[in-house]
Image (cartoon, rainbow, N blue to C red; front, side):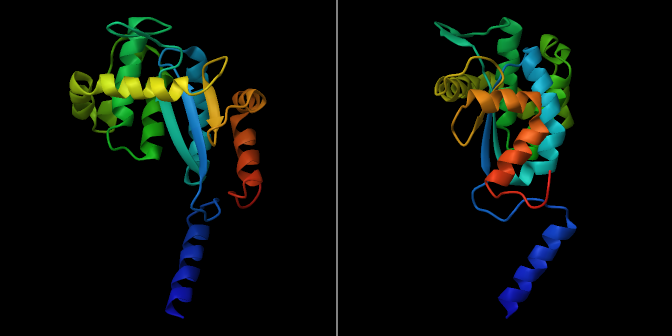
Length: 201
């Protein structure tokens, strides 16, 4: 009886807290492959941020700043030059600085709001989340390992353009176009199809 009472209180809490996600142990896995100086990546992540705030409890989000970078003898060569490589490295370190997923997306939304932050090698957004020192330390010691892991994840998929959006480990060109055109509606439809969302879009 006590367990039932606690469970009912939990359901009531979810309702009152505005959680629109159905209780599940398997949230939707969403992976975004992007580049730190890509205008298309900037536009998509700007549009994703308010949607993720709404649905973040339904989603297991992985952000991968690498894109069309290629391996070279001394590291990586990035599509938009050395500044982008710096931006990718910095964002990789920030994303692995013990931030929860909402904080990760908050950081990326901040960092990608102005591409000047990458061009000027600014730690402004990291400072806002109190991770500046950890990020700088990571860039001095661990960023090569993180870049290699980002490359491994990115190279696992076949895609034509950046950003690439993958759901549950599968890249689909049609869903990619739909998500980039209207991320809110597409994500809501996917969540409802997977029975992860209560209520309408």
